[in-house]
Image (tube, rainbow over all chains, first blue to last red; front, side):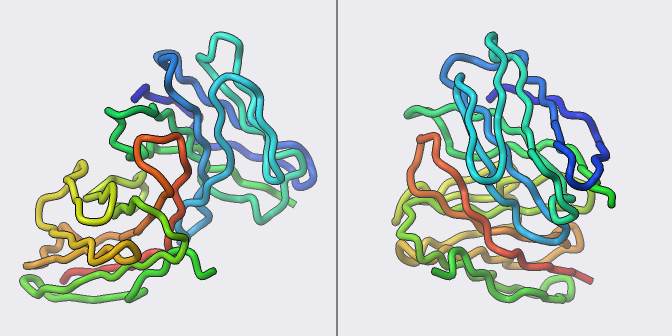
Length: 113
Length: 114
């Protein structure tokens, strides 16, 4: 699975959009981009995933660049409850895929009042 | 739907003691996973079960054994606990295997080995 690079930490004002970048320059054609988050002391929570098209759900939007070498997770109106560590994970599908998620260090997002 | 449940929530062991961490899911998922998370670190996969009746090693399997008791339950056993196994343990499940599906995590078991 391709490696990802994320900033260590970010701040965001409550009510503003939080834009979390992720670099995955070695991504291959069959690899998806996943985002999970982990609120303090809780189990990780799935947010969104995509292959090449932009995706949106009730939690967030995922913007993937045309060359697929980077992506941005957007939380449109961040709240204090969105304070968490956000993990960008690239994972392949197919018969050789072990299904495991490789969690890096993630980005610690601090939403401030 | 309770999702993924884990017991116990907290446990303190002495070096050399054994214990089993329990995990159950009620989503009819085929695949289940055990991860550990050390302070300030990301999660690391210990063992996984792609489907009922199969188990395989992950990144850090040493010192652990697992049992996929049935489709719902996946347990993690520490035969002889060591201080290096002090960690938070998360169980997860997913619908499929080798698919771009999502994993759902339990609340974790906080284990301290003295």
